Image (cartoon, rainbow, N blue to C red; front, side, top):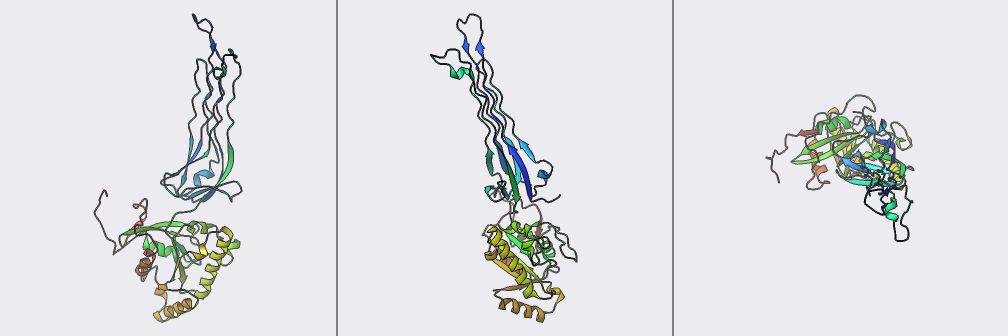
Length: 357
């Protein structure tokens, strides 16, 4: 499935149906009179956060959404039928923005959340509603309220508890494959990861979602490399895990580059990534000796890092200690909405019998 996290669409509610002008013509009724009914209400445009969606790809092929208009009124005081609402399903984590891409109209953070974006027009009055003691045969009616319409932007921000950041080839994809079965592509070249990947981790009886985004390079905030577009997918994370390649040229420089890009993005988008809790891990320790790992850890601590976790995403060494640290930043009951997707059981996972409670 293709991944798309931004889309621009046009939405329009339904117009109200016109009222009718009609008069009774029935045998044995002496005077008759007006009996034109009112028009029906136009359909609303409703957005709903749906289960099972994780991309906006459907909106690449359909950009115009128009609700139906209400039915027109008819004689014998018959009111026109109201039009059905137009329901548009979006993934959980979608933000709805005005055409200026700055004003947030709605933010879907929970499955089943429902927002009426545009209301349909009210139906017009028929001539029966104008009848009075001084106006016995009214011929006026209302055409029905016009529809509302607008262009909107849909921006998807994946909901995850933990976000992975780092330079390209820091081993993020290998790591997420180690702790979950996300199935991220792994390759010995920069920018192996081109789109965000989600995985569900089960560790010591608890579950949480981890997100892997494409690597950052210096100048990403200005569009270098893949840029910082995908940083929006970790804005909602509770904690960030910064992976640093121990086999790289300079771990301290790698730390500085990524932290600088997070700060630049935070200033531009007011996302606050620079103050979000983070854990620093020295990855690929299977390619270096303990003495080198300890020396690099000391250098990182000298830069202000409180704790450094030596790990190997390929062999799993040190991963359990890192996952223990991650759990300390998560709620006591961190559960996924769909625990059957992308779950990898660790050796220390606690199997519990099913219970309806």
